[in-house]
Image 1 (tube, rainbow, N blue to C red):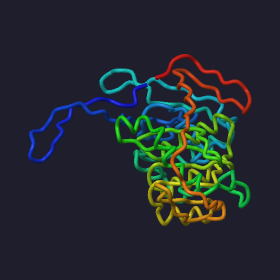
Image 2: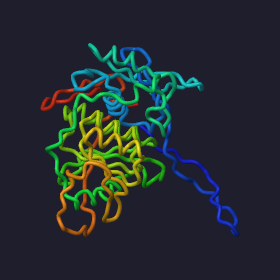
Image 3: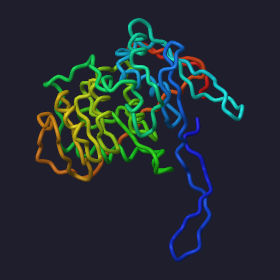
Image 4: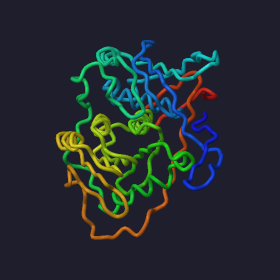
Length: 314
């Protein structure tokens, strides 16, 4: 699946003649999410890892909690205005009470790549109760590990290297080992993709993981971390006031301005252990390969059981 497209551009430098060259742009396309055949939401995203995106989005919305709540997902072939087939619809099978939650949280407008909650039908639905409360004890992370994560994240941003136009989110363990990384034009989509990966792998709640993001820490990212049971959220840029308030309320450690060899802790400082060590440089990290999105259907598996996929991907 293509995640970038080439386009001719005029490169302008004042005082010099424009140069015509090709530039690579991150692809942004709509994805319609259906639950049980009924339209639930439309989000603008970078194609790829769409099943992860849908799974994570449904976790964020409180529709699913465990992998067994989302037994199958299927790509539905649509038709573009040009008449060409598209693969921008994913229908999720959600048994039981998840269907009622989906109906109650139906969105009345589409979600843009910059806003993950702006389409909710009611402002009362913005803050959703999590099935995975953040425990005050458990994960402790060394300060030197937290300070190293932005460089570890940046080292694996392949799509950003070629386009300069996408956000990234990654999950790390307490020692700074990379578990999964995803990129997308929307930072909330990148977070949904890593949470969706965790759901499909049977790893929720993510009570032993750190979520590192490439941009700022907004309210919606803290909310998504809360819904996945993530105790530590670190961002390269600043948090918003509401993000800090929600993090404190939820018991989440919120880190901002994480760059170079320093960071600020806005909530939950007790999880950060001071080591007295200095950060000498980023450690190498490898990215697990993502499973291809099936053209037909994928079945989630409980932890420890084999995963099967249909051949091909959109």
